[in-house]
Image (cartoon, rainbow, N blue to C red; front, side, top):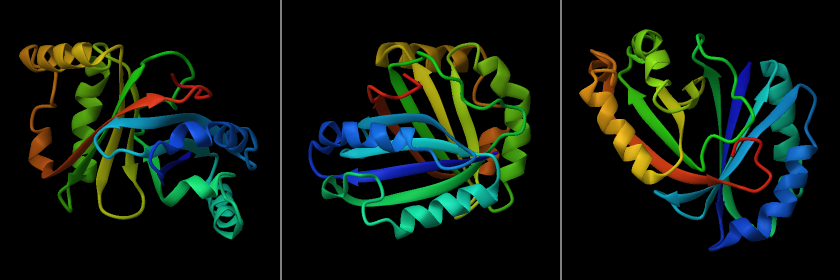
Length: 204
């Protein structure tokens, strides 16, 4: 399974104007695809919409990607889009695919750049610690990039920003997170984004 994370950079207050078009785009799935979620950013880089889809195999993903590139109006709302970026990922092999349902409404997207030889070392650290960490708050996805720089992107869900702060502090005090030795394989290049689900998102 391959995952496609699309970031749309929009005009100011663009997301509400794009919602109905993106909902239709999410329904018109190409062969082998599944739509998982749509979010608007609130803390971090603003005026962005984040879309998550998965594909059964790389051939189907590439076919859909080429169709998107060749479209005159790839998302049905080009007048509100400044530009967009698409990344391809695979899920950490011990995690299941994202499940539909209400988990938020606070979703945190965190990306860690790993050392050049650190991607799979990081995966093994997560294999030991992530299941226990996910008992504190839902781990929606943890994916490593199959293009671009070596990196790990995570999606965590919380009921509120206050809960997020409390859980993060508790996992540290309980010795659950971060994985012991895990940060040794990371670089200081880390980003965090807080986003809210759009009305039609299967993950909310």
